[in-house]
Image (cartoon, rainbow, N blue to C red):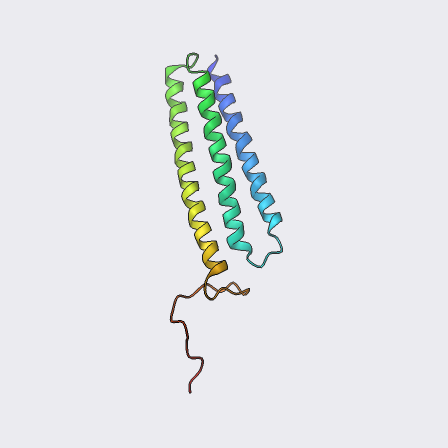
Length: 133
């Protein structure tokens, strides 16, 4: 195969999944537009979109590499392997971000002092004095 054609194929794969991820992010914003807990839910939804589309991009890139490995130039094959490694690192970071944002959402929603005012949950004694006696 011609190296420009191969480069265009890989770029097309990346752009497809990038556009789908951006559409998913937009849909998250529309989904939680009128929610009181907008920011934590939006962060979880966007992190979930990242994980979904990054994992599909990694699978598609792996399938492309394995299907065309005999036709690829050795220099270009190493470039594709580097791209795949970078995509796997992004997927790993996306999964870590998803776990972190889910924990934060649970803390905000189900914390001891969670309220509709979105004040951060405070960890302290069970009963506090209000004012002075």
